[in-house]
Length: 82
Ligand SMILES: [Zn+2]
Image (cartoon, rainbow, N blue to C red; front, side, top):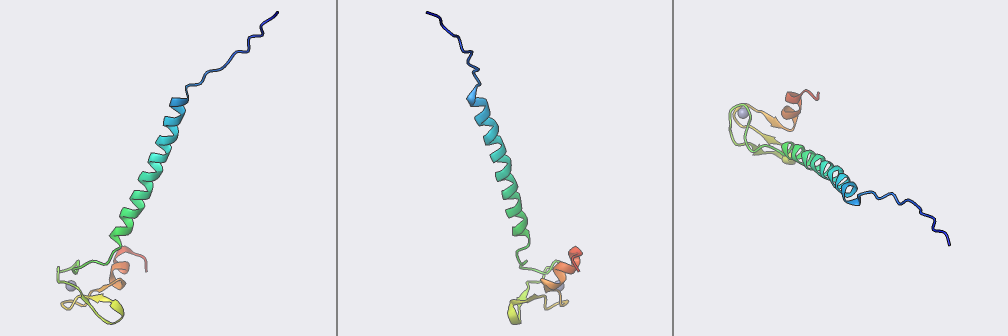
């Protein structure tokens, strides 16, 4: 009788699992970062120029009664998306 020794390569499955979860973690973090940036585009409640509370006009357009600043029109031009 002859035993054939098949060498089993033992890989530590735990380490691999940790690597995957690290990748998932970074993906989740990226998603959360995107969500946080999306929150920044939420309409402001006050004029960035003078802090006057914005008033909602026709079509829900927010504007500053003090200097006429409008959201989102002036917010976009300020960021350079024109
Ligand atoms: Zn203003």
